[in-house]
Amino acid sequence: MSLPSLETTPIPGLVVVRLDRRDDARGFFKENWQREKMLAIGLPDFGPVQNNVSFNADRGVTRGIHTEPWDKFVSLATGRIFGAWVDMREGDSFGATFSLEMDTSVAVFVPRGVGNSYQTLEDATAYTYLVNEHWRPGIAYPALALEDPTVAIPWPIPLTEAIISDKDQHNPELDPTTAIAPKRTLVLGAGGQLGKALVASLPGAQGVTRAELDVTDAEAVAAWPWHQYAVVLNAAAYTAVDTAETPDGRRDAWAANATAPATLARLSSRHGFTLVHYSSEYVFDGTAEEHTEDEPLSPLGVYAQSKAAGDIAVATAPRHYLLRTSWVIGEGNNFVRTMQRLASNGVSPSVVSDQVGRLTFTDELVRATRHLLESGAAHGTYHVSNGGPAMSWAEVAQAVFERSDRSADDVAPITTEEYAAGALAQDKPFAPRPLRSAMALDKIRAAGFEPEDALAGLERYLVASERP
Image 1 (cartoon, rainbow, N blue to C red):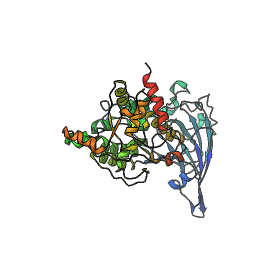
Image 2 (cartoon, helix red, strand yellow; image 1 turned 90 degrees about the vertical axis):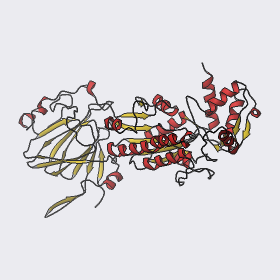
Image 3 (cartoon, rainbow, N blue to C red; image 1 turned 45 degrees about the vertical axis):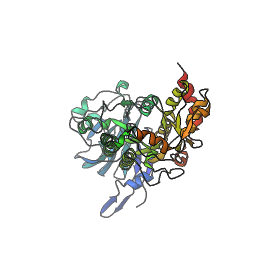
Image 4 (cartoon, rainbow, N blue to C red; image 1 turned 30 degrees about the horizontal axis):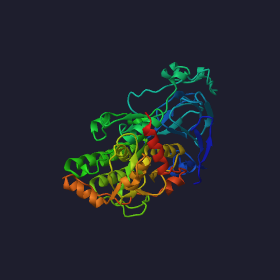
């Protein structure tokens, strides 16, 4: 069978689908919902989970206008209707209307927040619809009066002659103060460097710390209203790389970096939100000059292994962006802040020179996140860092010192082996590090995002940190 066709309407996101119905002497056949074909014509991959049928015995049955909190794909199994829709969402299109007559060859995709109604034009009309959330007892949603004078729907059968439920005869008129807000954005790990930057940059985002929502706590997860969110950004992580090598650290690292992302992937599949998860170049062993998104995982230490497990879990979510990043610098304690403080205090540190990578400033990571979400880029894994040539930690420290009126020579290069020996001599745990952390940025560039040079980001970061 051929592809259906799609027609837009004055209501953003509400589209009409002309189905390929095959008729013969026996009746007709149609593919009422065929996911691959629907996606091919531009319908969103809305993930239906329930199919309902509303059978209407008589001509003139009129239902609505109901604004249920889910997307719908409506069509007919038998009969004919006059369908009418009203945009009840916040925004410029609030109150916009669209109507048309439908038979069994027509379907309509109705996005969440658009009021849905219809009037049967024939007896024995079976109205069917797919939805992407399960119906829940006691759920409340806005409704609109069928006779509302503002929207003035041209019902073919006068409402005085129609068959209308008692409930639908007492719905309120259009009121802008009751406009439906879009689903929210949730930032997990809002107390960390990246979490703070995300909350500050994403208008209306709700940030929560682990104390407010622990995704490893089954009861807390069950009680949280996940269906209210369109996007969940997981900036929460266990990042104590060396402590992860201890018995307690191992358990905490796996809980935060593997179990929690697996839970979020499951919730994303169930509730349909887009999951944005932040990972690390530590999932690789550091033997490649630059790491690509499709490089096989090869983690070295416990922290790295837990992050790799989280990557595998997140990839199972239908709508996910997995952003691997490196050497993150933001608001709070970090390597650049430490070097800046040492330079100011007259200290001359020893810094490893055989670990090479690129800095990633949180504002750059936030900018990449927003770009992917707002551009509708293909879901999947992306490597994100600032651009420019790869540098060693020692070279980064030297750059900080030079911009702090100290000589680069005041930073003494050492090897990772020498650094590890010092830690082990003090009975401190030490995790293996990937020596090459630079990641290929071709895929994120192909998605239309151009990373800022790391040294330019460093300059701006140091200037900002000097302000009172």
